[in-house]
Structures are given as C-alpha cells and as structure tokens.
Length: 300
Image (tube, rainbow, N blue to C red; front, side, top):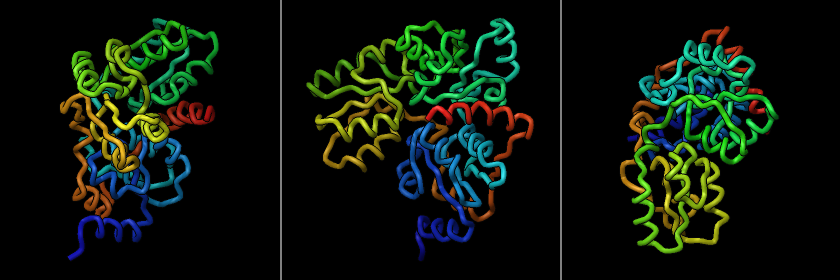
C-alpha cells in the first residue's frame, strides 16, 4: 500500500503542482515540500514558479501572497482555517484611518498581513529585509505595520523613529528573559538566536536577532556546536536536518503556533485530490497589493 507521501508525490506529478512550506510547518510537511523557507524566501519562490498548481503549506496571508504573485495559477491552502493572529490585528479600514492621521508618511507593511492591508501600503517587508526596505525610503516619515516588535527593532537598528501599529505575534510573546538566562547557565558558550518578532527585552538578551532563513544560514557557518533558539519550534526540523552534527535547544516547549500546525499530510493529499481550498484575491485589491510586494522584491 502506498504511503501518504507517495500518494502526494504521484498526485503532485499529475497536477503539475509544487508544494511550498514555511519553516514553522510540521516536520512531515517540510519533509515532502519542494521548497521550504521563511517569508522572504517563499515570496521569491512564488515569483518564479512555473507549475500550474501551488499548494501552500503555511498560513492564509502567505497563500494570499502566492495568489497575488501568480494570478494565472491555482493556489491552494490545505486548511483555510490556518490564519495569523497578528495579521488579524489590522484591517484595511484601520490602516486607512491611521494613514489619515499621518498624512504624507510612507507605509511599510510586514508580509504578516492581509491582502487588503498590503493594498493600502507603499512597500512590503519581511523580517529578513525590513532594515533594507525602510532604509530605501530615505528620510521619509514611515508608518510600520502591523508588528510593533519588528518595527521597534528596525527603528533601533536604523536610528530612525517609526510610527508603529501595536500588533504582535502571540507565539513569540511566550519567551521569557529568565528562560534564556537559565539556558545560558546550563550551556555556557551556546549563542542565543531569536526572531525580531520577539519583545525588546528578549532581543536584548540574545546574541543574534535573525529571521528563520537567516538563522539557518548563520548556524551552518558558525563554529559553535550548541545553539539556543528563540522562535517557533518548527524551525528545529530544518536546523537539525541541515546540521546533523549540531545541537539546537528551544528556549521553551511553548513556542508552537497552532495555526502553523493545522496542515497535515492528509490535508495536503485532499487538497491535491479535489483542488481545494482555492485562494483568490479580489482583482482591485490584488493589483495594489502586488505593487507593494513587487516594490520589496525589486530591492533584492
């Protein structure tokens, strides 16, 4: 009897499909993906896909981005309930009101946002390129949405005040400085890597503040053998797979995003069998959101 991965592989071939997975997806999903990456890596991949069908294993805003960048393709998300609490913290209407309070300001929108919010923005960014994106706007006043922590980190690094929306990632809020200190004491010399979605005290307690893709590249080059990791635990699969001779310790066992864990092998199979659940974006919103995404990609 064929295994689920074998059945998925055969259906993928028949559908001329590609499977993309975020670094926070369950291990078994990352194992069958054609491409695994962080938001920036996945955005780049989406812009270059030639397959007819894209199965996006991530959360809704990521699949929306794929649909925006591939208007002629079928974009599927295996579980349409896989949302993002941070993205839900800002609507297009709220952003329009916020913009009216700061006339003339440029809007930088973290990709962890809805298509409607992207459509109201001048340029998108990811945690990997937020500094470059804001720097590209020169001396302009900048509104940064929706993550106050990534925005605060960007402002600190550039020495530039930003107007921040008070959004945040609930998963990255679960890291305590005391937990980092305890792990440092137990593993002397092990560097601490955290995501810029973490609060400032956590970032200040770390050795490196990096996107998940940057974490993967950093540990491969680093001389150390043991690393303390402060981001969603799905990243451990890729870190351990690419670096089998190194040890990766999560800051705690609560760093699990329930939305990122909603997709299963069965749901990927059903998605390919029935071409469900299709992700579409209203044409007018898609066109404007695409401008903001492509403005980001042009900086690369």
